[in-house]
Image (cartoon, rainbow, N blue to C red):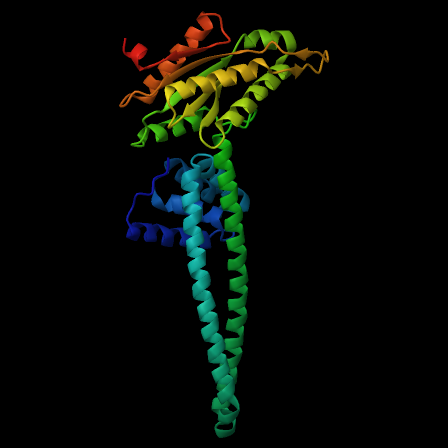
Length: 343
């Protein structure tokens, strides 16, 4: 895990070292290269440093392929938040350089105009000085050309930065999403749950845990592809119910969770009953037999958050409610409220 709780001066030193290292490689100046060398310069990532040193010893310089490999292995795939921080820092560096280059270009252009204005007059007064001025004009023109070239490169870098930001956002989203259903996965839900419980206004927060009944039998009877369709159908119901107010997730296999902040336990139970009824009404076509299957049911457990308790305790109690639903015959909702939990 990369950390960047450092002083501004230390960060500036890492930046200077990173740019120095980048200038010695075959890879172009871009956010990926900067991210690798900034992390290398910080000295905090032993595995990255070791692999970079090995590659430098073998290849002398890092090229685009090796740089991208290092970024994907040690930065992007490990910590998308830190990767995003690095890209944003590099974006600021390039933006600052672009601004400075644009100002320098404007100053150079003004200087050349002044030289042009003096050139003819000085040529008449002192031909030797005029020749020197001509050489200066030529050098100034070359400088302007170089400035324009650098500006084009910087503009291209800014476009690449924008693309990389989008890729990192996408990678972060994919890391917390369930591929089959599009719901949040367990990792994403655990993060959302802790964030919810860490807020001061976490009263009237409820949790719903659901499990598709006899799902193994569904898979055995109709096949895994049909089982996937069942999971997706249940997920669509949860997605619709959750809207923008609640957090729905596939917690694993055929199990789902729904976090309901600012919701009383009575309302949470009504929501659970609504979901249960909708699942019971599902009709799914078996593509193998062309039959419509409609005997899908779901068991659910509901509980309310007790102020000060841990996330694990909250989840365990909801899971106990779910177990009770299954033990009492399935296709039902069990509520464990505060009074039962304290008993």
